[in-house]
Image 1 (cartoon, rainbow, N blue to C red):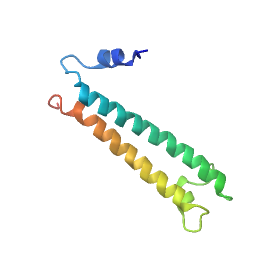
Image 2: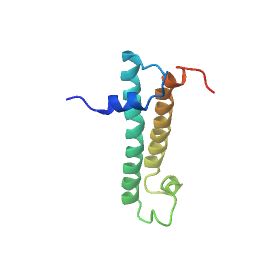
Image 3: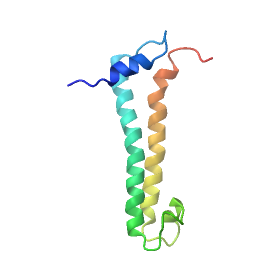
Length: 105
C-alpha cells in the first residue's frame, strides 16, 4: 500500500523545482526518519532519566540537571545529548539535496 505523502510533497514543491532522484530520495527519507526518531528518543530518555533520578522534577529542574555531577545516572543525559545532536546533523544532511537544486535568492 502506497502512502499519499509523496503526492503531497510534489504538490508542496515550488514550481520549477526538480524532483529528487530515486537514489537521493531513499537517503533523504532515511535521514528524515532518523532525525524525527532522535527527537522522540530524546523525550523518552528524559522520562527514563526522570524516573531514575530521585530528586528530579521536570517542573522545577532543567533537563541538564540529569547530567550534573552527583546525579544518579549522568550517562543517560550524555547519550541523549549526543543522540539529539546527531538528529540535527541527520536533518542537515537530508536537506542538502534540496539546497543544491536551484540558486538561493
